[in-house]
Image (tube, rainbow, N blue to C red; front, side, top):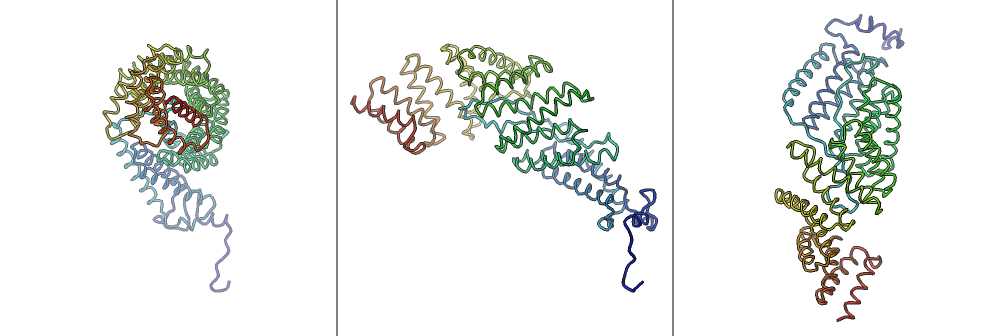
Length: 491
């Protein structure tokens, strides 16, 4: 052999030279032993679960570091299978075992420190009125919890499950950090490495989180696609008779259908949304019972969808469902300070119920509901004086109460409420459509009581706002111009 050249070694010969019984090198000293694949997989599992403890504690940057190291270790383990040993020659069996032991101790300490930490209660999945200015629907989506490694499986089976779990957990971190597009990329990667046919529950969970992230990112079309695939997966799981508990399948299926219903609701496909909401209500009644807050949320969503259809025959049924939801929410709120029911949820249901009574011309009931909601909304706003967003419900409720007084012919009471609403609206600035609506209503009443000067002043202000926001076209702008013309003629 010429000097400076090396003997050519085949892959199988390299394997035989370095390993004996798949774990013991024959041409290395004991101190230089390379770790087995099993040790790498064990370390990756510990790192995933270490990241999970930080994740649960809300320390997302450290969670991400743990997850990312778990991914890197698994990539190293895969190099054993392709015999790329030069890339890992600097790792010894002892160093990997020591790292695994250290991570396990740190994970256990962190778990003990966070054991008493109060678990964050997810928001209720309530739909919002189409004209609501309250918290954006996308912000109220419940983000799933991270998953521990599949320690109950053997090495070969978990080789695909654990990487999918870690990628999924990384996606959850990005979703929680308001980076839904990045989250969907990680969820897609998790689905690609997972042998989906044999792991339907995990596949379904990843699809659900993917749909949530797509929905948060505003990609409604692809969110609906993932949800449709997910619903099919859950149906397959239920039909297969696997050991996955039927109640869990039912509740997860209900959550998926609820999100799909929300998408149809926001797309103004109210008939399809109503069908889906009825399915959710049936599933939750079957599993949780009628008194559970998640069942009450489903009742409210169905009431809201029926109300938005505009059909008179749906009003009474909507009122009945909304009243049931309200009673359950109030009971849960009073029974526990840590209830998932927030004061804002009760305000929302009261506001919707008041609107339903108003449409049914049950003005006394409408006024009662709206006044109760206003009392709660003012209390919330007073508790958060530095947050103007807390005044949104106050402004909307004052406006609705003014409308009721106006409809009943109580012009001066309506004027007082509209002026109060206007004062609150000015907190949000002069340039928004709700300000124009309040000014328009004030102009109408001043016109009706014969104060043409003020009527003209308010409608001129509305005209200026409308032109800035709507341009020179639109039905609302045309009606304002007609009213101004009529006032000028009467003057």
